[in-house]
Length: 284
Image: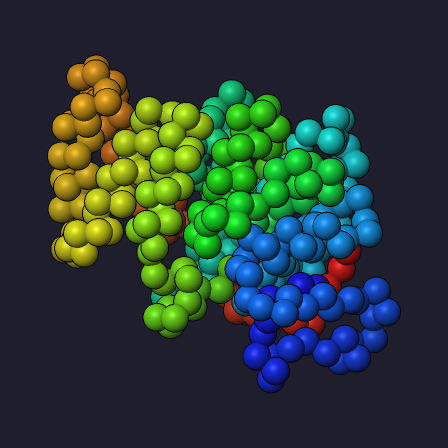
């Protein structure tokens, strides 16, 4: 377990659990999520790595089901397993993603155009793979996307586990990284990954940033789509044919996401915190 310079009252005490394999490695200064994960990879003594953030949790069968899947695969040095998960929060209980990345589909299109998700707390991969693709300490946001795009560019295979394996908790407090978009960081991510994004996904990512920077709320889905459509049809980096195809693909993907969201909900009997928390158990 990596403690990224928590306050004294938040430091995890290994003696709270009856588990001799738990080690706590503490950064003397706060170095950020990327450095914390990289330290975990470096210090791990197992050939396989799975991540768990402190505010989320695994479902009890997470490791067992993914290890079973992993053992059926070939060339495991060059693949990463990711899976479905539930997002839970004040008004959310959504199961995502709705399906796997398609064969030969670029990761950027899966993430930004087709509403795919590869949440880091569902990953399972060899330590050697994660040592080849460490998280960039230049990013305090989008560090997982950056790692995935670098993997994709080098031909890493992504295997989808459809059985939900984690709960992602949405914390809407204003001091949380997930509630505040760092536009400088996101534009740096865009610049450094320009060659790894497909032309279509780059336009979509740019439109998302512009929409967020404007801070103009959308009164309805139609208003949201209209603003996004205006940006797409004015994208100078695409031909007119590409703009029309992208617009049609994006609208279809957005509407499909809205429809599927109504039916892919977390089971009521699962609760909001049933599972294994990072502050309850750490494994290597």
